[in-house]
Each structure stands twice: as structure tokens, then as C-alpha cells.
Image: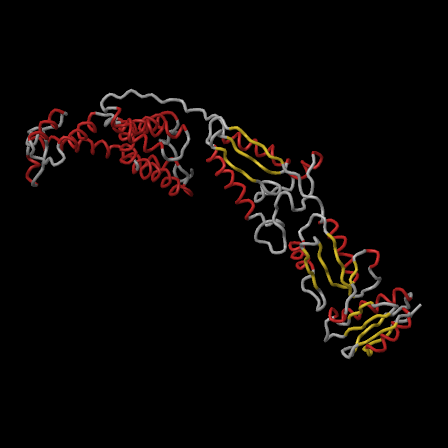
Length: 480
């Protein structure tokens, strides 16, 4: 057992202890100087003590370089160990125990030395002063200088990376309906965008990581047993495993696909969807009474270029046909086409307007008021009298309606109970009457169709008033 209690001790004292424990001869350069701190509260076995000392020296910038005949070079913090002759080892069994600085020659079977150098550089970042990774492409090897414990770890990593390339398949897929060139463009748009934004190792834009090149790049072999597992790794950004190559054979209208076997079912299904038979929509038929089909068709064709469902376009067609397929719109359309510069006094315009049933200018049947004294004209007086009678009917309603509304509700909530239904009825239903009636007329093409709005609500009011409103004749409004 060894007691390691050397707080803030000189490095020479630690090296003398290390020399006693290992039995090796230490050769130190002039840069080996300084203080180190080792303090273990309990005694440890000598093998563990040796390892603790080597780790401590390494952490403080001192390097141990093995030489022949049990000689170990001790390199200080101001000198690079590679300048003192670091031993080169190629057999994992010859890697010395502990943390000695060595150079190991990794012989590769499949991996590319230059790209593996970038991967190792990322793994060893930030590097030590003695860290080095030298690719040897012609020898298909890489020479790495590090301490022996790191070399052993890199050996395990390289063993997992240096594997045969992934299996790829090549297949021509025949298209029946779609154009091969256009389908390839759509597929490339799908796959290439996923590749650029996937953020997975092996994709472009990641330093130190290899791009996939079939035939000379190591990739895991995908077999039938791992196909499902491979597909579960797909994300929204990476829609295929590995790389995929697509080419359009224009002469035979086929698509050439090169990719991993696990991707082929998905690619075949995707191409089949692009080559699917598109079912045509159900034709819409509407008989026109006034306007010609040639006038309606250009507008509908323009409307159909916008996205929408089949039901949407049926409604568009019905509304447009109803708004233009009526006598009035057809007359004005013909006038605008025949007389683009027509004025109100044009005889042709006057004749066409009269033929459509519009009254002539100056017709005695037209009621006009140009000054206040026109109210004494028989025609105007008759209209004013008719309006007066209608106003009398309104006042006959407004007289009892106030008393009836008061008697309908209890005293505590009477004001709110009267105000809410009154303003909903008059403000919303009454206020929207012009706009709603106009919309009905524009939708149907019938100038009288807008009358249905007041008729319907008047009928509802009559039914509610006759059958649902209670009698309030003998009700004490102070107690209800």
C-alpha cells in the first residue's frame, strides 16, 4: 500500500516516488519544474498509485514518453513531446499501460483517413500540445499521437466506424400517366430539403463528418431484420435513411432510383401517388334564360384557377349565374357593349331602356318633388296621405306596446328586460333589413325577393304575440 499525501509538492519529489514504484529510469528535460498537488486520504495499492501519479502529471502538462530498456522521458510543459521521439505503435497489444504519450498507426479497411481525421479532431477538441492526427491516404491509415489511455478509447471508436459501406439497390420505376422529369423534380425537392435541414451526422455542412458516397463510405448494412428499426429513426426533416439518387429517363418515361433497400418501399409508394389517376369532378349544369354561356364561361374559368373544394365552386357558379342571368343585367350589358360612349340623351339608349320596361323621362306617372309646394300636387298629396296612414298604424302600435312591455317584467329587472329585446328587435333585425334585403335580391336576381325578410319576421312576431305572450290586463306591476 502507498500513501499519496503530497500537497503542493515539487514535481521532482513526485517523479522520485514514481521511479521507485515503477522501477523505471526517468530522463527529464530542463522544462520539468513546478508544483503539483496529490492528496489521497487513504492508502492505495501501488498499481493504483502509479496510475494516479501519471494522471496528475498529465493534467499538469507533464508528458511521459516511453523509450527502450525501461527508460521513460519526462517532458515539461514548455516542450512538445513529439520533438523528443515518441514511439510509433501499430499493435493494440503493445500500447503501454498508464498514460504515456505514444503515436499509434491505425490501419483502415473502409473508412477514409482524411475524413476520419476531421471526426477525431472534433472528438479530441480542445487538443493537448502533443495531440496530432495525420492521415495517410495512400496507405489507408491514420497516425494519431495521444496518451495511451486516449489511444485505447480511439481504437474502440475506429473499430465501430471502420465498417463496410451500406448496401444500395438500383431500380427503374415506370410511370403510366405522370411525366418522369416533373416527378423527379418534385422528389428532389422533397428529399434534398430534408437532407439540408436534417442536422444529422454525415450531412453537408457538418465539419468532420463524412458525406455519404455509395461504394467507398462506411455505413451500417441494412437488412430485413432492421428495416423497421431504421424507419423509426426518420423525422420530419430526414424522410429517407442515408442518401438517394434520382434520374429521369425521358425516352421510356421511367425514374432511376439508387438508394438503400429500406427506402425503396417508401419511394415506390410516393412515385405511385404522383402517378395516380386523378378522378375528374362531377359536371355542373345550369340552364341560362337571358345571358349566353359564352359570357359566363370566361369568368368561371378565371374563378376555377383559384384553390377551393368542389362544393365551393358549385356555390360560386350558382351565385354568379343568378346575379347576371336576369333581364336587367342583360340589358345594361348589351348597352355597354353596343354603345360604350352612350349618353343619357342617346336615342338608342332611350329606346333600349324603354324596351326593358323602364319609364320615360318626363312621364306623368313619375312622382317628383322639386320644391316644397309640390306637396299640393295630387300625386304627391296622395303619396303623403298614404304615408300618413301608415304612420297612424305605427302610432297605434307604439301606444299600447310601452304599457305591455312594462307589465311583462318584474319591477327590479324591468328596465333591462324591456331594453334588451327592444333594441335587439329594432336595432339588429330592423337595422339590417336594407342590407339583408339587398343581399337576397343580388343573390336571387329577383327585385321582390327581399320582401321575404320583413314578411318572415312579421309572421314570427304575430305567432309569438298570439300564442306565447301572457295576458297582463289585471297584473299589479308593483308586485311582479
